[in-house]
Length: 121
Image 1 (cartoon, rainbow, N blue to C red):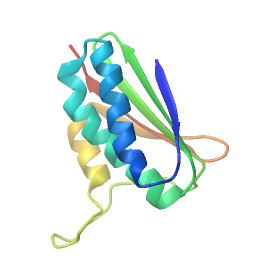
Image 2 (cartoon, helix red, strand yellow; image 1 turned 120 degrees about the horizontal axis):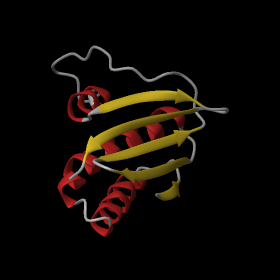
Image 3 (tube, rainbow, N blue to C red; image 1 turned 135 degrees about the vertical axis):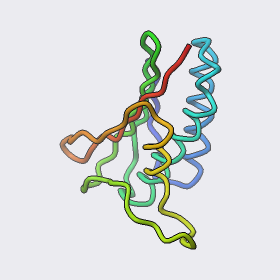
């Protein structure tokens, strides 16, 4: 397991990508790095934009699976919504839904955990 606390700042998405990639390389799970890095960036960006609180990023490795969890103190359950084709944003959870093996949201007091899993070799 690897974890890091990040501030609600735009640079945290980049820091989260680097952190996850470094963890996956150290675990010899490089094949999952591209998808995992992309999806963690989406979840961290959502937490920054919507929760506006510091967040905890946790990466776990188990047999055949990488699980990433983003905890924030914001309220509300994020859901993939309808996005107009010309909208500049709003596709993050649809991307998570399409690329991840599984994903979900768990209540936490205060706030929530948004998580996803991807296959690893």
